[in-house]
Structures are given as structure tokens and as C-alpha cells.
Amino acid sequence: MIITQVLLWLAIAMVLVAACLALWRLTTGPSSLDRIVSADVLVSVVLVAICLMMVMFADTSGLSILLVLAMVAFTGGVSVARMLAPGAADRQRYRRDDDAEEPR
Image (cartoon, rainbow, N blue to C red; front, side):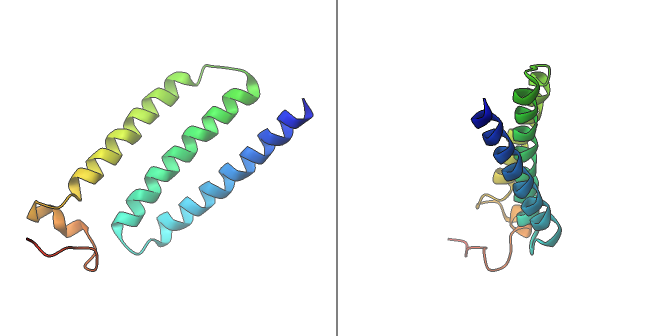
């Protein structure tokens, strides 16, 4: 039982470090794409934190929140990827100049 508690606290510490790093990238990202990706990572960190709370308290009441938040995160990630996909000229304004490829 003590090993389980140690692993749980270690996971909580890792989630806190990941949240701090994602927040740092969200505030200081050089481009809007970096900020969008860090916001997506932050949503994933929140998902993991909710999962850890469910494990700690042996309660599954947060399962519906997990499902809705995961669906929103997936939809957001797909929409950003579609927006930044090469091919449409109006989508290229969201890319950095050094990331943009020449049209073929």
C-alpha cells in the first residue's frame, strides 16, 4: 500500500511540473501555434489530474467530465491541424514565416 501512495504522489508531482511547463509555453510561446499546442497539452494535463483524483478518492463521478473534455480537446486538436494544413492560402497566415513552405 505504501508503494501505491508513493507512486500516486510521484504522478501528482509530474502532473504539476507538466502543468507549469505548459503554462510557461502558453505565456511565452514565440508563435500562436506554440500557444495553441501548449493549450492542448494543458487540457491533457487537466484530464490526467482528474484521473488521478478519481484514483485517489476511488470515485468515478468525474468520468462524464473526462469524456466531454476529451472530446473537446480532440475536436480542438483536429481543427487546429486542419487550419494549419498546407493547401489553402487563407490558412497560411497562422504559420510562422520560417515554417511556411513554398507553394508547389
